[in-house]
Length: 220
View 1: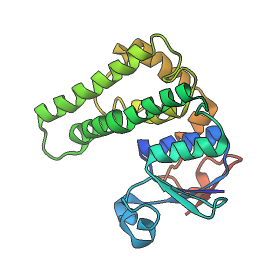
View 2 (view 1 turned 90 degrees about the vertical axis):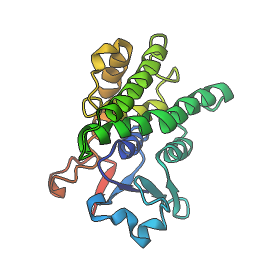
View 3 (view 1 turned 135 degrees about the vertical axis):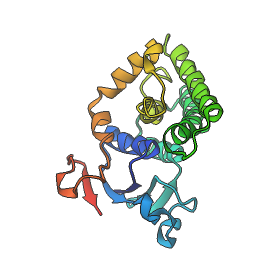
């Protein structure tokens, strides 16, 4: 059983998608960010960085893992799925996963903040992060002109990128200008596990009305 510490963010959606794709049993542990639960001492023992997501693997001596990319790799290795065992295949997936962690997530995250949340509108700053996000989308679009998925076969790299691309409108970016990326986005979005994973969690809804699946249990 995996304890999954989460809230509604693109980085946590990566993990819920992967847990559903890998069909690993898990329990949701909601970390309410607005209440600063991620900064509490008990949680900092799990994730010293004070962010979500994090997991505890109850089947592996309560081993804790934080950072979404590290969690994806851990779960892929645990399940034997979505991360090739051959050197080149594994490296290709890791390259795109690291690309997301170091580029797409941080840049689009800043685009989200300055376009939607920041109290002062700073056009030059908004433009800077939106343009960099568009550049990164173009990198994906070019790659996907010759591949169905980022690393060739569907992998944790796609799981990492999808929740961020799903927020393109929130960042003020039109996806239609990237035809190959749009095709990939539509294909990934049709996967049953992705559809479920993108709803985990739904903290704004009462727990008894949350979508339940055979392999997850809501724990408050």
